[in-house]
Length: 427
Ligand SMILES: *Cc1c(COP(=O)(O)O)cnc(C)c1O
Picture 1 (cartoon, rainbow, N blue to C red):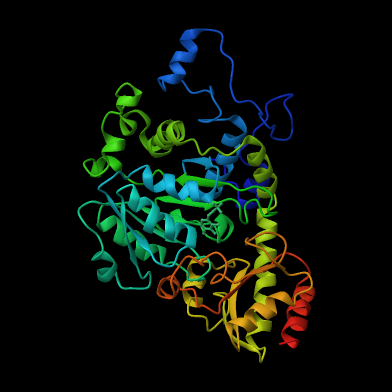
Picture 2: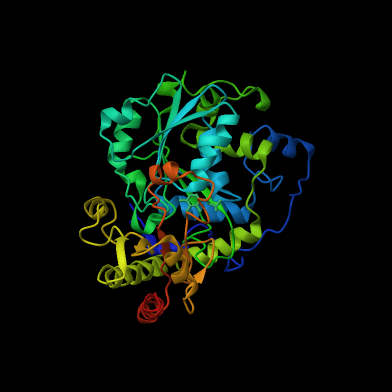
């Protein structure tokens, strides 16, 4: 058997495999549609009898090559790209839930996902119970109901920086007969592959490290192919009973391990249409080609910055799981032995106004609503991304009102520290 390629090689070479005489670089198939010679050929595509392209809302060769690369990086059987990370998390859940169903989610998750699950999906009739991810098995298990369809968490929570005990979450999910969905945006498959710890489905906001240059909003869903839907057939009728909108095919019967992604593509993308543009998929692929180099540098720089802040007299606290002494250091050693990510959070001694003044004093560290790209940037979640949450919800989501989120880029670490230092001096 051929040795499996390492992540670095998949980053550079994965997904697109040009044949003799074809372009060396993944082409952008900037075409909404695809041409066929006979009505019969086209009809077979619509019936999911043949594989092939007919309309870019469902599938496009550029997107599929990039999805393949991400699936290989995660060690999954199949993946799909979505227009955003929000769409990825929505589809990942909605693919196995409908009105009257329920999910359990870690409370330490991205603010957008917290709203999606807590407010918007509730309007669709899907309820969510949020749990403290650090609670023991039985406490988390008590949140499950007969109509619960999934457990959800983030490998490294944005911006709480909590590290998820993936094995524990997988154990709890599986003992209740549901899949574990893990948002692996911050760790990326370079630093953690949740499937190796028992997760069943992984999602990404590719907008962050995967693109890495703040150029293209996007998302991805990856299936491990490991969850046995048919063993819990009555819980997942969407996958295990005939789909009348596809002439009565049953996804698990016809597609086996590909059932989940095939249904999400054929049904959800067809009807909801949050497709990633081929142009953005191309940019994402360029980002992925250096993911392994950038992630390592982000982690190195972030650790240097965390150490600097940690010993600064004007800094009240630093939260970075790479720091010995951090609440999640041991968890990070287990799940993220090669490094966590470039994002850390800290608070300055003083008032909320002092935090704002600090942010205004930087030279090149910029205030932007973004994280995880090449340029160092800061954000104050309580006044920006999480401003719709109450103080109790903020604290429940692990976001202190004075928390400054710092996304450490890949510049020279001495320059980043210098910029922080001169701004802190002005306080
Ligand atoms: C940014 C982010 C999202 C949402 O992704 P978008 O691409 O902005 O829609 C979801 N999860 C995590 C962990 C994120 O950081």
